[in-house]
Length: 138
Image 1 (cartoon, rainbow, N blue to C red):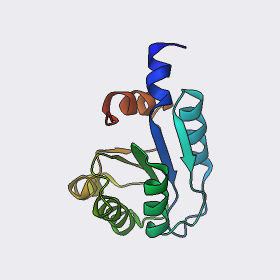
Image 2: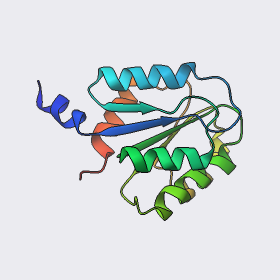
Image 3: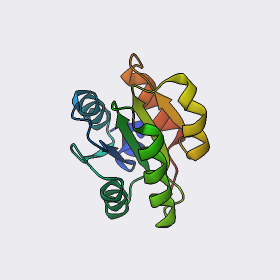
Image 4: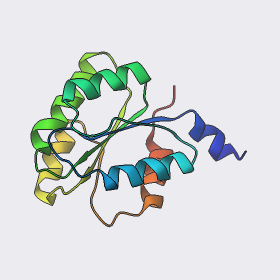
């Protein structure tokens, strides 16, 4: 096992699909790519409430929360998830958002605590490298 794989084995990533959005192909592709790259991955499944995502993040003691939103509800759902996780005392979590996110919404999501927004066309390698470089050490 390489040193990068050993480090990745300790990084726990939650991939979440909040709200009514029923399209999860992208989230599943990301989850599988991260798993194949050596990360521990938890996928919440479809139609999760922010509270369900917060509870999963706490129970799984994740380092990274990736929220996939294609429904346009990102400005409401993402801050609610981030605030819930932080209120629960998990202050060293890397928050990522992916999906159909208009560029004009990036600033608001980042102000809410999102560290990076990934849009369609982002390579899997770019996402893996970003997590490698930015996931909190515990």
